[in-house]
Image (cartoon, rainbow, N blue to C red; front, top):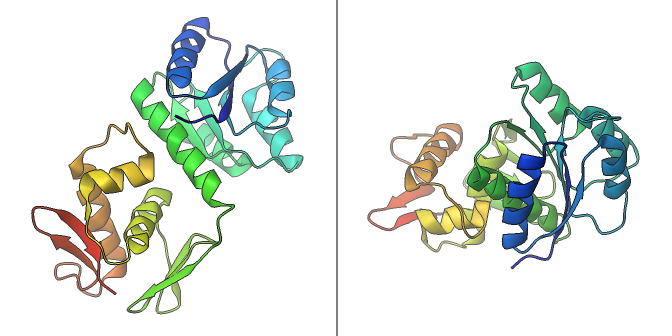
Length: 228
């Protein structure tokens, strides 16, 4: 069970009740604020590991809270919640420094998986960073960049996490379920097909011949492994 401290800033009581209960069931310590001013004060306290932040709040809106926290140098993951599902709002949140942006209504299982993934990525920041190499591929853990023949390959955050999981396995075969758990944490609700899709995209971006991959190989009936 996790002991991470999560601050939930949300003014809809029905969302607060369900989300708080589920976060606490996951083992998180949860503090709740129902308006932006109180939420900002809570997020500024010591020992906050993650903030779940609604956009539309009384007194101070979520975007302004996000902007202030990042300007102050606070680096905890912040997941934005919003009933406004426009691309402009998502881009604004991400550019201001949000870790993730979730549109309402949302599934609790999905949001909890995103919380686990965000906390896991944050925890990795303090780990010593390695540079992994195979073939003409170089993976920089510190910058989360992947280069092929010295040229940056544009990977999504989750594609990078899948690739890193295979690198850290040091040639061992990982089942689809093991990869899901590594990138989303225990209690995930993804499917094996999700991992197949990520591997297909990684092969398209990194393999010379995606139809006959040399490095990101399938072990039939088991899963995948990375062959240096």
